[in-house]
Amino acid sequence: MLEKTGRDAKPVDLAKWSETAPRYSETKRMISVFAGRPLPVIGFVIIALLILVAIFAPFLAPYPPNQMDIINKLQPPNTTHLLGTDSLGRDTLSRIIYGSRTSLIIGISVIAISSAVGIALGLFAAYFGGVIYHVIMRFMDALMAFPMLLLALLVASLLGAGMKNIIIALGIGMIAAPCRLMCGVVLSVKQNDYVMSARAMGMSNLRLMLQEILPNAFPPLLVMITIGLGAVILAEAGLSFLGIGITPPTATWGGMVNDGYKFVMTSPVLAISPGIAIMLVVFGFNMLGDGLRDALDPKLRGVI
Amino acid sequence: MNQENPGNVIEIKNLRMYFPITRGLLRRRVGEIKAVDDVSFAIKKNETLGLVGESGCGKTTTGRCILRLYKPTAGEIRFNGTDISGMNENRLRLFRSNMGAIFQDPYGSLNPRQTARTIVGMPLIVHGMNDKRQQNNRVEELFKLVGLDASMMTRVPHEFSGGQRQRLGIARALACQPALIICDEPVSALDVSIQAQIINLLEELQEKLGLTYLFIAHDLSVVQHISNRVAVMYLGRIIEIANSRELYENPLHPYTKALLSAVPVPNPVIERKRTRTVLKGEVPSPAAPPPGCHFNPRCNLATPDCAESSPELRDTGNGHQVACFKVQA
Image (cartoon, rainbow over all chains, first blue to last red; front, side, top):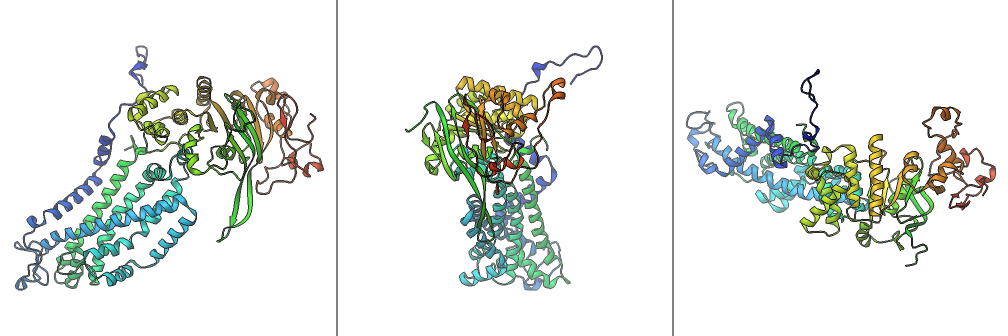
């Protein structure tokens, strides 16, 4: 703390050392934590690009996604078709661009439905315990025991194929994971003294759950949600392959991988390019999730 | 109100708290832990009652029963004459503003995701002070009261030191101007110099605001310093209760004597001459307490009839109560 050593060292003026550290606004701190490291920024850029591409697809795509040109089918990448054409002569790049819409809509709506329901059920189960806990969690066990594809097949055979039904099928199938995670986290969070203190001051159950427990239980879920987005995009691809997904000819990345893998020896670009798109988006969501988790954690103030 | 002594803020009568031990899929009840077993005491307004005992003797459970964080198995808890032991959850929620609680762990008792302002102001919000300006003024006032700078209001708990965090806990407990504060080992997680600060703060606040404390601790010298009266617990029962001075100078129960003999004296001459009573054995399990007087297997005065029936607290004069057959009144 002393600026110089030896005889002419001046004592530090203690009045200057105020007890409080200089304050920055919390939003500024979050942004600086988030933007201070490369990976979250890369993730953010990928997701932002994805959203932009999905919105402006008609302007970006060089061809309409379903325009067939049988004479020029299975072309390798060239100047007129940057990523070549598929077995029906459709432009791969255009289909990837339009496919981002399907992926994004399905990914976001499925995750929104499944996490909202899953988080609410998990919170209730763990907070109230007892019979409520057992009923909800045994139900989740049953849901988990079903392979998700089988469940989706069941829903699709009841409701028929199509975007809306896919969202419902996957949404139900994905409830169990966030519910179980939430339940586990809440069981540990509710042991904290601050929860007991909130009860002692007379806080209502709902407020206690939403204000004291949920914010402390949320970070692991944030990561799970972003990883889940990738999983949903993959699951949709699987369903499309089984013919109960999005009905052709609507462009979806999963469907394109499944169409393209038959030609993987002759034109590998067909399967690989939508595969890379899926991979990039999943990676982007994961990095975004990681970055958000760190930025939202006040315990890391000053550490990162 | 059928109150026996109007000067008492709280009166506990025959409080029992048994926790069931369950086993198997059907949660069959195979036994119970008698954490608190027939405890009675009262605290007068403006008084501090110290509650001491070793780990697992039920002192924290007693505190939590009074806060009604647990629903007691039996007994009465009269707060200013109103029995709250069987009160339903909705009435209790409004009633809770009458009692404050300070917890042991200043790290765990503050929500890490809320700012200091929200933490201290939360009881106000819960009990219906909706005006933001009014709230803010009260929080500022509380900060000043516990010796924290108002400029720290926007910090989160992680940015405070242990002592400052405990001050936040105290500010929160005081927010609704409660009549009674349950301090559950408020200083045992702090280092010694900070302990002294916090204890002085508690004493100062008591004088200024006319507070009543139940001070739960295991550190005998801390309890002696802050308490007017001290109750000693052993295995769910109060075995001796007396004026703080009286208890330390003239302990009657063999357990209290052994406890006090374990406190080192900061004077080498006396310390060397001091004879220590070392208790033999371990504390028995509260799931299967020994018959009769709970202390009899470890007691140096015990005779076979101590295992036959359990002694009641009886007055030996001057409000000094002890539960032992062998102590002459």
